[in-house]
Each structure stands twice: as structure tokens, then as C-alpha cells.
Image (tube, rainbow, N blue to C red):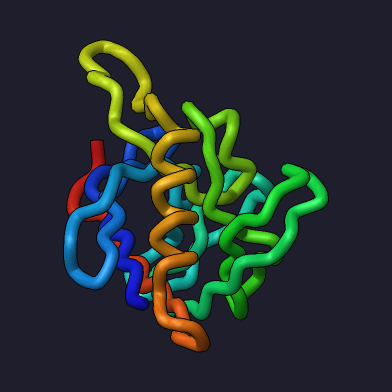
Amino acid sequence: MELTLTRTIKHKACTTGCLAIDGNYFCDTLEPVWRDIAPGHPGRKIAGETAIPEGRYPVVVTFSPKFARWLPLLLHVPRFEGIRIHAGNDRNDTAGCILVGQARDAEGHEPALIDSRLWLHRLMKALKARPEGEGVWITIHAPLRDC
């Protein structure tokens, strides 16, 4: 199974995007802001406040003691550990992770998500429905524009 997160806008305080499963749009995403230093440079990291670098990462579903539930976990992310895909509504809920949901109309407001628990449930259902033994990967693409 191939997940693709295409970051759409890099806002001052967060990054919005779209998540696709096997090439089909699935839902919207919200992450912390990516902190570029210079083109081609891996950027700087502030714990819990920085989006992960673009790239392709294996994903496993493991039990999260923090959330007390089974959640997707990204592996082998340079300089990051414990990056999960989980429910949340705004940048205060990310702590460096990827939030899933439906984008709220952000007219005049900081970007946020709604129905996040519903979209997480749908993602977990899709992950469970894949053929037994099939791996899961996520590819993360850079933002299209700054805001």
C-alpha cells in the first residue's frame, strides 16, 4: 500500500496537505511547519514543532502508549522518532506528527481539521483491509507554496 502526502501550503505555524492511498485522494493533513535553512539543506529541527523531511518511509501499525491505541508509525525518519499518523484538530495537536481529517474553512483563521477521529478510523480500516503481509509506505512531497 502506498500513501502519498502532498504538502500544499507552508503556513507560518503549520503545513497543510493532502493524503492519497494508492494514488487516490483520501483526506487532508496538518503538520507542524517545515523549517528550511536553504534549498537542498535538511532544515533545522525544533522538537515537537517541526515537520519531518520529505522522503519515502516505511509505515507499521503499532500500539501507542501515549494514545492507548493502535496507530501508524513512520520508521527511519532522519533525526525524528515516534512520528505517528493520528487524530487532531490544529497545530497544537501535532507534536511533530501527521494529523488527518477534513480541512476547516480557514478564511481568516489558522488552518485546522475537522472530523479527525472519523478520518483516522477510515485510515485504520483501509490499512486493515490490505492483503496480509503487504507493506505500507508513505512518500512525503515538499510544499507547493508558502503562505
